[in-house]
Length: 214
Image (cartoon, rainbow, N blue to C red):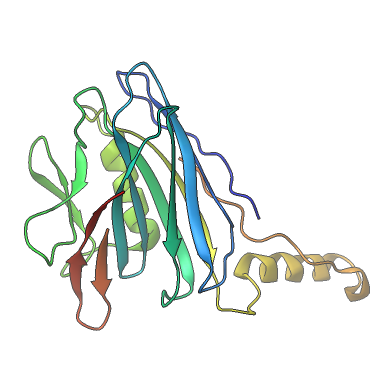
């Protein structure tokens, strides 16, 4: 299922970020491609893509092409089935990410305001937040007054090979309740959400921070 173009944040440089995901419900082992465009009066050298679900967090810096487009393909082999949250973030006029993942130490899942060094939230450890709560906290942070980063957000549902996406199961159940079972048809996978990489080792409760260029 094609991705859906996102609604974005706007900065003083009047940037606009849009993005799509190659499939709304890929199976584990299938590649997942995030692509999009940044437009505006002042473009940065690249964008930062956040991908997270449960105790998995990945943040990559991806270069922009001359026309403002970008693309990044992820290998989903070994990742757990889940709803994954994606933020594509572009820095504002100063060229710096005002909201970023803490770079100090190999085990860090802390999201900070780089202008004030204030801790916003933590992906792991005591008091950590994940999934929808982490998405809301990240969105609130980037939307905060004084932060000039632009962003867009979306989701995709990673499913086990051969499994029916949860959204399709739900929609099929609703349809079955409304019409005879014989007329029920398959429904589309989960529609993508709209609006900016460390790998967290599940059993250990520690975040292994990995930042990738390109």
